[in-house]
Structure formats: structure tokens, C-alpha cells
Length: 127
Image (cartoon, rainbow, N blue to C red; front, side, top):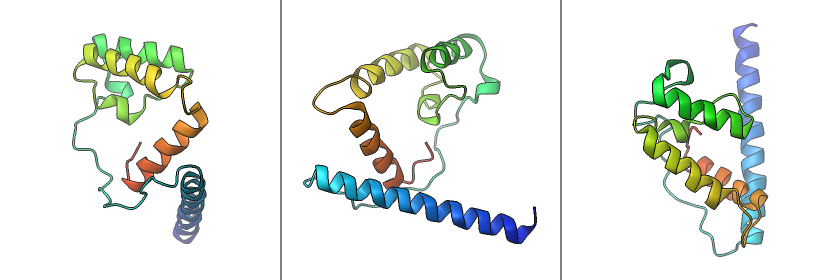
């Protein structure tokens, strides 16, 4: 791939991401008019040293494997990797997250995930 093609592909991806973010913003503002969606942007680098999937050993690897088996996904999300230095706490975070984020309540899962995606985008969160 040429440098020009790579730049063009990156620009197209950014435009797509901005389009999706704007769609999500409009949807959230219509559904939840009191939510403030403007705010300061954080940088996209993590401040915590993450234990990557390939580097996980012992109890951390066991927790990662449990999460993969339950979720059906292959790559551990960065937000969970932040807790990998305390595998006992990571298990509790996963359990709490499953209860709060992925259970039915006042909001359905689709709505919760849309809000979480938008907030992550606003914060320039890498995950």
C-alpha cells in the first residue's frame, strides 16, 4: 500500500468515526435531552501500564480466559486491562460491570452501550 493510499484510508476511517459519533450524539440528545455532551477532551494514552493478552500469566491469564469464554471475544478490552495488576479486583469489576452495564433495567443494553460509546468518544478514550 502506498503512503498516499494509507493516508486516504486513515482519513476515510476518521470521517466514518466522526459520522458514527455524530449519529450517536444526536440519538442521545433526542432520547436524553438533559445529558450534557460537551466537555474537555482527554488524551488517548493510558496512564496505567496494561498487562497485554500475550503477556498475561498466572491469575491474570486465568481471569482473562474466564472473560473470553464468557464474552465470546478474543481480545481483552483495555478498560479491563487497567485492573490486571489486581486480578482479585478485576474479577469483581467484571462481575459489577455485568450486573450494571449488561442487565436490563430502566435502560436496555443497546441504550447503555450507545451512551458508553459516546462518552468514550468524548473523552478520546482508546477503549
